[in-house]
Structure formats: structure tokens, C-alpha cells
Image (cartoon, rainbow, N blue to C red):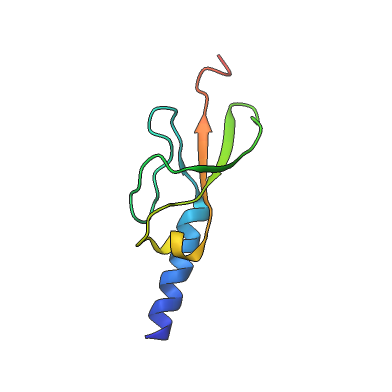
Length: 82
């Protein structure tokens, strides 16, 4: 049972750090529980045509939220290099 729990926690951390898409219209969505428009905890500067943000999931039953893990999102400005 402990191995399953460790695998679950490792997977939650892995998917939150991999990065989710960010759009101005929908914001970022929690990859674990599906909560939409996650609150932004920190926004990085633009790096070329991309910007990284970090979010916290407010979902009460979400493992990522319970662990206090930040969720990385990536926004791309498709018109920046045109």
C-alpha cells in the first residue's frame, strides 16, 4: 500500500511540474482534478514568445492542492515572431 501511495505522490508532482497550457480565455487547468482558471501564484517575464506562470489549485479534494505543489503553465504568443 505504501508503494502505491508513493507512486501516486510522485505522479502528482511529475504532472504538475511538466506544465499545462495557459490561455488568456481559460487560464490554466489543474492536470489532476480539472479545476479551471487556477489562481496565479507567480508570473515570470516573457522569454521570446513564451511566458511561464505558477499556480496553486484551490480544489479541496485535489492531491496536488493538499500537497501544496505548484502547477506550472506555459503561455505562447503565436504572433510574437510574425
